[in-house]
Image (tube, rainbow, N blue to C red; front, side):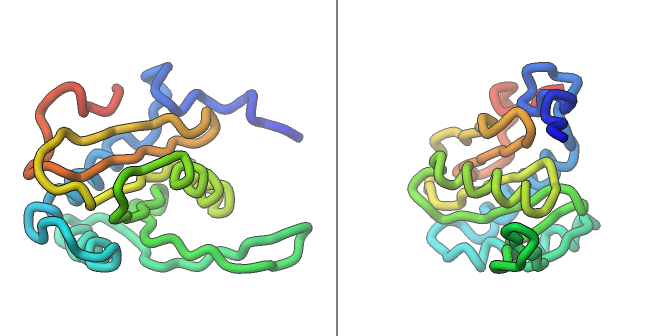
Length: 165
C-alpha cells in the first residue's frame, strides 16, 4: 500500500506541516556554537564529536553511530550508521565539503527511508568566513532534508534563515 499521498508536505509549502521546527533550530544553534569554538578546517569526526558535547551540555537527547540494517528483499546486505540522531527523530550528518549537492541530499533521503525517520539535517562546516548560511529544504515531499552550510560566527538573526512556522 502506497501511503505517500496521505503524508503532509514537509517542505514548508504548507507552513503548518513543517516537522520538528524547534528541534532542528536547536541542532543548528549547536552547530553554530561548535563552529564558534572550533572554527573551520577540521575533519568531519571532530565536528560530530563536538556536537555530541554540545548536545550533552544543552540536554539534547542523541545517539551516535547507531546501526541500522540495510535490507534487500528481506535479506541483510549491509549496515547504515548515521553520524548522529538527535531528539530520537532527526538524522544529523556532518560534512566538510565544498558545497552540499543533490548527491548528499539523495543520500539523506535513503538514510531517512532506512531509519524510518522523517527529518534529516546535513551540516556543512567547510566554508570559512561569513558568506551567509545556506538553508535548503528541497529533497522530497515525503521527507524533510535540510542542508545548512555553517559558515558564520553566530546564528543569523535575519528572517531569511528562519525556519517556516
